[in-house]
Length: 422
Image 1 (cartoon, rainbow, N blue to C red):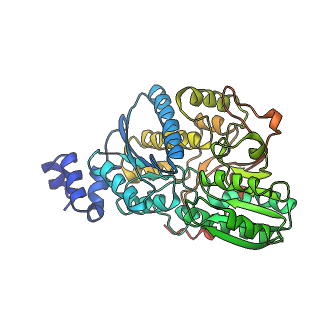
Image 2: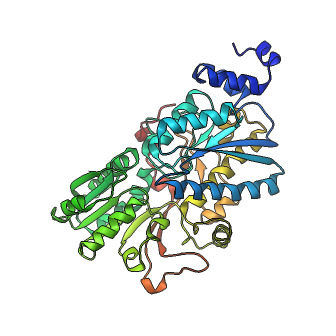
Image 3: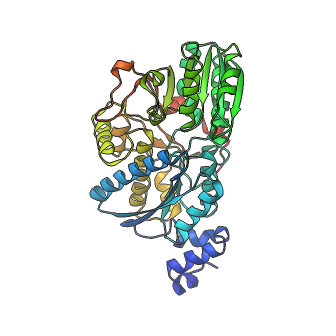
C-alpha cells in the first residue's frame, strides 16, 4: 500500500492524514517513509511536543517546554536550521497523550516527537511511536519500563531511570539508617521507584520494614505517615510524585515528625520544595537528582540565568531535560541529514554526547546513548538541603547542594537486567 506509486501519486500531508484516519498503526511503513521520521531534509524540522500542560503536572511540562525552546534558539543559531514546535496536552491521561501525539504526526506533520511527565502516559506514547516508526523522546519520565520491558526501537529516554536514581542514593540511605519505610505514588513511576529503592537497600543489607502505596493525586497523607511513624523504621523514603510531595512534607512537619527520622527521596525536583518555607525544605537529608541549579559549571549557571529571564519558574531539572531532549533529537537529524526514523536511530545508538549540553550537565559528563535499551547513560547527583541561612532566592532559587557525583555506568543496570529486548 505504501509503494513508490503511492508516494508519487499523493503528497506527504495527504498520506499522513489518511494514516490518521486509518488509526495509523496499520500504516507504520507510510509514517516511516513519509510522516514522522520521514526522509525529509534536516534543514526544516517540525517537532511534536506532547506533555502535561494542564493539571497537577503542568508546572513540570511547561518548564521542560521552556527549556526546549531555549535549545531551539541555540540550535537554529549554531546549525542554521529552522525548527517549528507544535504542542499537545496529555492531560495526564495515557490515551489522550497517544491521541495528541498521533495528531501532531498525522496532521501537523511532526518529523519526530518528545514530551510527557507521567511514566504511564510516556509508556503508552512510546508504544505508539515504536509501532508506527516515529522517533520519540520521553522527556521527563523515569519509570524503569521505558528502557525495560516496554522499550522499543524508536524511543530514546533522555532522563535517568528510577533504577539509576535509586542506585545514586542507595549507599547514602544505607549509611544513614538500617531500616526504612517507603511511601510511594501508586502508578508506574512510584511502583518502579519503590521496587528499585527496595532492591538497592536490601543489596546493602538494610531492611525495608514496610511500604505504603499512596493514591495519586491525594490530599491527605496523614494515614500513610502514621503507618511509617508506627513502623519502628529509622528512615522514611518519600517516593511521592510531583507537587504531592510538597503536601506530604507539609503534613509530616505539621505532625511533628521532622527530626525523628532520616528523610530521603530518590528524585529531587527543586520546584516541589519552593512552595514550602525554608525550614520545611531543609528537612531533606538525601536525594538523587539528574540535574539542578546546584551544578556549578559556568555553562550551568549561564543556563540558569537564561531560564530565570525567560520562564515563569526558576531553573530546575525539568528545564534541563527539555533542553537536552531538543538538543539531542535535532542533532541526530542533522548528523543523519534526514528525519527518517531508522536513520535517526542509527545516528543515536551508541552516540557519545559532545555538544554544549555536556557543559550544562556538569563538565566531563560521560554521556552516551546505550544501544541495547536506548537509555541515555549520564552522571547523577546526590544532593542535600543547604543550611537555611545559605539558601538563595536571587537571581533564582538555589536551596540544595550537590554532595556526590556518580558516573552513569556505575548507577545504570546492565541491559541484560533491564528486561529490554529489541
